[in-house]
Length: 185
View (spheres, rainbow, N blue to C red):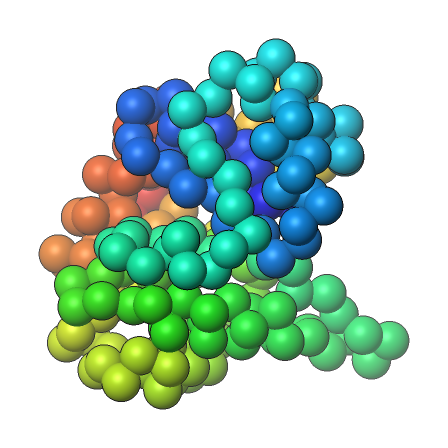
């Protein structure tokens, strides 16, 4: 998703020279970003226009990617229960295009166990691959406050965890490219 978490993350990673594809299911959002417009007025047009990141609403463009960062909303209902439908849908979309060796990092705000117990099985089902063997999971809670121009994606310590040390090394290496405040394993 390319909302208040996904867009700054996409732009920061793209600044490092990485080949970054920002995906969102909202075609209007993608069209606006391609035109240099952030509908939420969080990111100046000149920043969006100068990025080498690409934006798409076509899930087929996710094919061949080996590193995914999921930043979708997890709103709560009136009973304070999280709605995981966007997270499940994102997992199914990625899973249908998942290849061996890929890493999927979840940044969406969730309760303990969701990455391993909900997202992993959805990815496995959609991909026919084995979680922890053919593809790998990681979690890094989003650390962005909408409207806060002082504490952004680059200057707030990132926290990251993964299924195994090798996956964690990949995740930390990715985030260390742009997080100047450091990454806590």
